[in-house]
Image 1 (cartoon, helix red, strand yellow):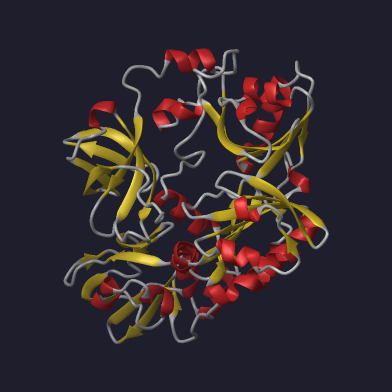
Image 2 (cartoon, each protein chain N blue to C red):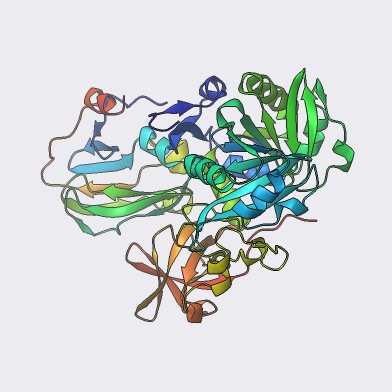
Amino acid sequence: MPGSAERNSPLHDIHVAAGAAFTDFAGWQMPVRYSSDLAEHAAVRTAAGLFDLSHMAEIVLVGPQAAAALDHALAGKLSAIEEGQAKYSLLLNEQGGILDDLVVYRTGPDRFLVVANAANREVAARELRERAAAFDVLVEDESDDIALIALQGPKSEEILRNVEGFDLPGLDDLKYYRAITADFRGHHVLVARTGYTGEDGFEFYIAPDAAPALWAAIAETGAGSGLVPAGLAARDTLRLEAGMPLYGHELGPDTFPAQAGLGRVVALTTKEDDFVGRSAVEAGPPPGARVLVGLVSEGKRAGRAGYPVMRGGAVVGEVTSGALSPTLGHPIAMAYLDPDAAEATDLELDVRGSRIAASPAALPFYKKEA
Amino acid sequence: MTEPAADLKYTAEHEWVAVDGDVATVGITAYAADKLGDVVYVDLPKQGASLKGGSVVGEIESTKSVGELFAPVDGEVVEANQAVVDDPTLVNSDPFGSGWLIKVRFTELPALLSADEYAALTD
């Protein structure tokens, strides 16, 4: 809520009981870790992890022109997705910069659920409302009425199937970036095969008062399979290994989609009508605009957000996210580099005064086995 | 969380100091280790290095962030803990024991915090 100091998730008491350490995230007190970042990260790569993402924002558009309104408001062609399908999209400003990255679910012929970053809740709700004003559609910020739990990792499906009282029609055919409506002990749940870890997994949108029972049921069902609750620290290293951008790090209002490698998200060729940011995106980023690259180095010392990237004596870029990759065992980073340095093999990270050799690497750094 | 041990001295930078004659053994507290998360890299001053109290002399790096090691006293490093360089997880698993970081020979011990005073800082 605007102006409110600190908010707790509907699962807060469960996290406290589990011994979680908390961090402030966009005004929310969210679990940063329960025991060990590395153990939680490894559990998601090898078994499963359970995340509380109730801080995320959910904005619903309903009405005969909902699809047309989203085509105008967002970079992608949302009218092209079918009911039960999800699509990653961007909210652009008129200058072509990124105001937020979002996942949009079509939950009915005339109904869409837009999931925005917690920090951008107000911006996303306001922009969607303003941009949809000329269309026959209602825009509702339902963030306070929706909790979000994510189950991620190779054992997710097996665990999900064994949760008692979870009726999941259509799970057998549920593909990546698709969603189904399910029933958990009388509560309506949107179950989506989406995530932010680079693993198979599911996200559950459910009423806040039903969320604790769902969390407990999944945690209990998965405990024997290696499932652990996982915090935002693990979520960050998982998404970094998977090469997924994070708003405020890789994405921001001064970044064009093409710079972030997200040119494909903008439907320039398939959308005939105008949409916010179109002309700026068509004109393209200014000459010499930096581009997002993956960097790897040896040893244990990681470049971190804000660290300069050097070539010879010159600064040629800046790290936006970095960590010692728990899965790969060496440092990885995402950085914006001058275009002529983007493929250079003689780069160095300035790690608090020490120079660490770095070289470009294809994203994602980590890819799950098919 | 592990309570600060009564026989140790502490600093506001969340380090502990164990004094034995003119040698101070220095580590970070369990509170600091918990805040950092899993430690994956430590950078310690070399044996023989001359330290100035209050200055940054090393780093303790976790997956999530970087902590600085401050010299709690003026003095000379007589030993840096190679075991913790080889296995930084010792900082998390045994911060007051095998996760110690450096031993420093000092001439004068500055005012340090008692266990109770330190505990009050972390409430």
